[in-house]
Amino acid sequence: MTAFHDHYRFYRQRGPLFEAESALPAAAPVAPAARYIAYYLPQFHPIAENDRWWGAGFTEWTNVTGGLPRYVGHYQPRCPADLGFYDLRDAGVLRRQAELAKRAGVHGFCIHHYWFSGVRLLEKPLDLLLANPDIDLPFCLNWANESWSRRWDGSESDILMEQRYAPGDDIAFAESILPALADPRYITVGGRPLLLIYRPGDMPEPRRTMDAIRDRIVRAGLPDPLIVMPQVFEAYDPRPFGMDAAAGFPPHGGPWSLPNDRASLQLLDPAFAGTAIDYAAMAQRLLENRGGDYQLFPCVAPCWDNEARKGRASLGFYGSTPARYGAWLRAASRRTCEDNSGDARLVFINAWNEWAEGAYLEPDRHFGHAYLAETRRALDGFEHADAAPEDAPAYPPPAFRASPSPRHRIVDFARRARRKAARLL
Image (tube, rainbow, N blue to C red; front, side, top):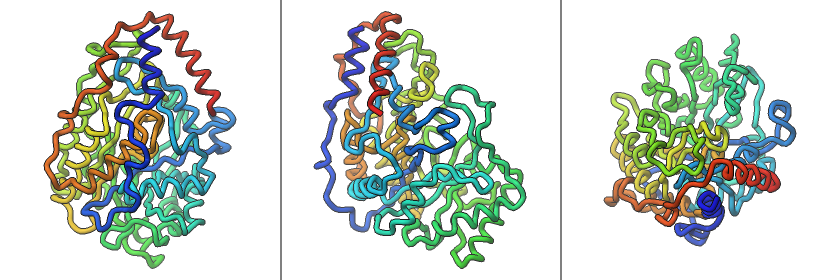
């Protein structure tokens, strides 16, 4: 059990790349050449629906605390640091997130917005933000227009909340977001409100839907929105859907086809049956995406790993470090400045706080504020030449190249680790 235990402990404490909050400048950048927008998950507060579906008190933290390392170099578990296991019903959390984002050079958040024929879910953070205009946090919305299922436990066909697209839903949706679009903090490009819609291909008539949304927003006296499609599920070109531009959303966009390195990795859990892909390979693959004849806003990810949700069947990217992330972010920043102009020089980041997918900038126990600090360093100096993402040193240190533990001892330790993590909530 020694190798598994040592690996587990290594990631639950400060690592050699740890950076304290003091690594962040005290003030926001002045006139940055690009704007960074981080995707933001609001599922960090309990709601009645999740209580019913998953058990009382369920939030995203419930998933996060179950993460376990399956191979050497697998960064699990992931434990928050300064912000703790926060509750997004607290406006103070939003204020603290806004402060950290500003100092790290993150211009604002793209908040995932859940709307089902007039029913909103996980709306509390957005409502708090609108109710507190003193929170200095630019934001925009991404309508996450897909049905909810029990995909976290493998039951894709068990629909919990269906996205129906009933007659009039397009108008009702547009009306529902008018207060957000009218907020002076709402992010615009060329004066146009920036609105993302996650899966237009699921809509029966996407072009007609986009036209209806635009028309209702303009009739309300607001500018024609810039409607952007995240590049997910092999949909890359926004034009067939009547949308204006595309935005990256890694790891979607190509890396799924990269080799699964599971067989060449040193497994800590011999029963691991998931997929492990090199992070640097993901970065290089996505940098090849130039958009072609449509406008594209690039996107980078600090990492991505859904082990906390999928366990032994998970898919994740190993080998991320602040330096590798920073190299990718610098390259994406140069790319957006080459391909876009003015305030359309955007780079999206996936994500600010997708903890159960291992994709977050917020400080954690192992790296501290290193990813935030690297974000600011990238923004302040991306015009200079940098190493490619694969040139950064390997991580974790070679000391972890030890023999794997017997399976039954791993399982026993895993059970005890999960019980201990659950007590933190």
